[in-house]
Length: 193
Image (cartoon, rainbow, N blue to C red; front, side, top):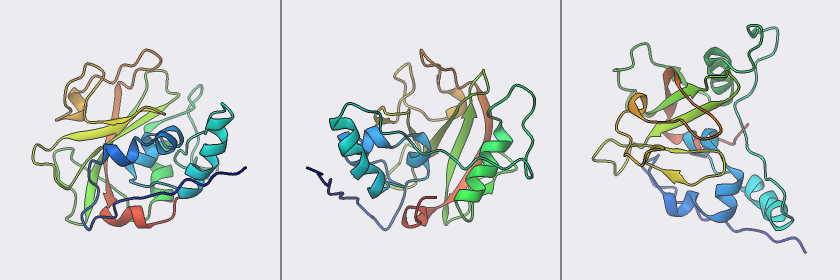
């Protein structure tokens, strides 16, 4: 029997907002990673497929940024991930994405800030987002692979500045800060690529 998971997503006028009760639901948490979370996109099709996969003890798989073609970008020898390759993918996936020239700069009024890191082995990436709404302390939040969304780093400290956060997990160390991106507030309304 094919179950269908009914999705309720608070499409608040102000986005993004830290909503752990929504993002940490079993099938959303299992099927969405830091990229989906930072782009503020819950994909209903991915959630519905995940119901079957999890019930059959399979991994749901997660979405990542588009990979640039060889015509657009040449990876340095021995590297699977670079800051530039991930940024190119995000810009391809999310219309209106901007890269901040100065990390202290704010995003335009209609966009929110996302931080991009890559790991010390140049094989993986990690995104954090600064929730724009109902966030008086200016905290950053993130989601690691199939883990829950949180405003805390590995040490359990609230994330006020992603560059000061401990992102050294037992399986990966996201220690290379790439850049800050500005993502359109209404990105959750775009279909995911």
